Amino acid sequence: MIETKTSQSYYKYILRFALSMLLCLSCITASKAQKKWHIQKDITLDAIRLSDPFILADAKTKMYYMTGTGGLLWKSKNLKYWEGPYKVTQIDTASWMGANPMIWASELHRYKDKYYYFSTFTNREVKIDTVAENIIERRASHILVSNKPDGPYIPMEDAIYLPASMPTLDGTFWVDTNGKPYMVYCYEWLQNGNGTIEKIELKSDLSGSVGEGKLLFKASDSPWSREKDSKGNDRPNKVTDGPFLFKTGTGRLGMLWTSWIYDVYVQGVAYSESGTLDGPWIQEKDPITPTNFGHGMLFKTFEGKTLMAIHSHKKIGEKTIRIPHLFEVDLSGDKLVVVKPFIP
Image (cartoon, rainbow, N blue to C red; front, top):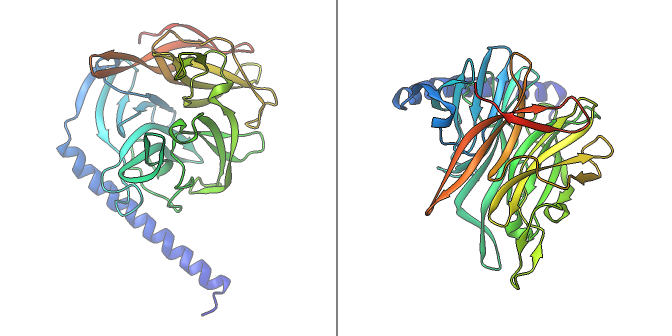
């Protein structure tokens, strides 16, 4: 059968109708699931245990929504008291993610009147590679969509955004000076030995990716991160983690990202000389946040104050404790300056 433009339009109409019905069904399913989930109210931020916190200040609903590792969501009217956690993700269990994927470093972004859930999914049942003693599991950055900031977030057109042979993580969102949307993500050091931060163009509705990824910079470009090699010699750390893009008051493009100084978790910043994602990216000499804080992001409160959401990193025995925190940030000049902790 030869497809005409009319028949193609018909198929697209049927596909859109089916996706709409799926979204409605997901809303009902999510609502029922949340009734079984224990929701707490009036929780203070320091009482929440959460890695990689990300806060969306949604002007439409006048509500703050926080997510992170674990795929859950909290909401607040004032940043002081939170309600949650809510389960907000709906995945295709027949996809590469499997029935029960790990969910890391989730982000919420509003774009063209829809809400997008950038997250890292890991299927521990699938091994894609073995490098030295590292068994590489199927892990990738992916995007879900919803009509509402509190979900449910469901899959879109493309089954994958990045190559299945690469372990990728911590995808974030940016619209560059060319008006095109991009995912900026980490290609994990476990496979390449020197973690990178890369970009890939997205479709206009973020339902998939376009072309191939492009290198922005490597972990070894950092002047501040450190580790020891097998002979005990100093070298740059191999970990890239948690990229987040921002603009300074003078219009300078910057990127937060996190690595390690030996066993200390730290966050640095790089700036693009060209003002675009293509860089070149110049790394600041020193970290910009206190030690054992990392994976930060920036947002503006409804009162216009710029804040950084970030987590503290503390190991107690075999257990790692991560708690979300807020810092006041000054972006008025040519560089980002972290001012002081913010207590709502």
